[in-house]
Amino acid sequence: MDALNGTGQEEKRADIEKIRIDSSLPLEQRMKQYLERIKDPYCFLCGKTPVRICFSPEGEDLDTKLKHYIQRRGAAAYRRFYGEEQKER
Image 1 (cartoon, helix red, strand yellow):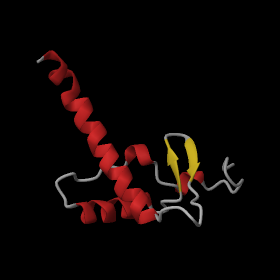
Image 2 (image 1 turned 135 degrees about the vertical axis):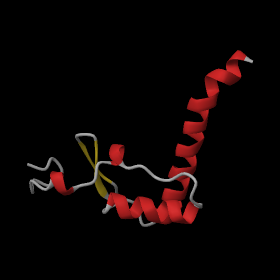
Image 3 (image 1 turned 180 degrees about the vertical axis):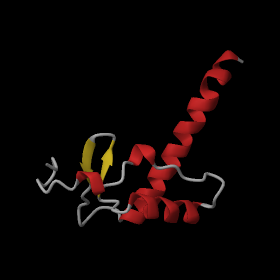
């Protein structure tokens, strides 16, 4: 049974941990690739954990949120890759 809505449909959701995006693509193409692979950006899995995303009518739109997410994700990957090396210098 689906933990979010009891429909038993969790196997149809994309697992965000398995989604890989070509980082050599321009931002707009990376976003398109992400949306194609996630299927439903508001309802997906993170491993075995179901995730449902909701936004306030007064908040930022999904496009803006995705841009911020991709930028943060890229910065985090950069820090993971280069962080220890920079500390040693």
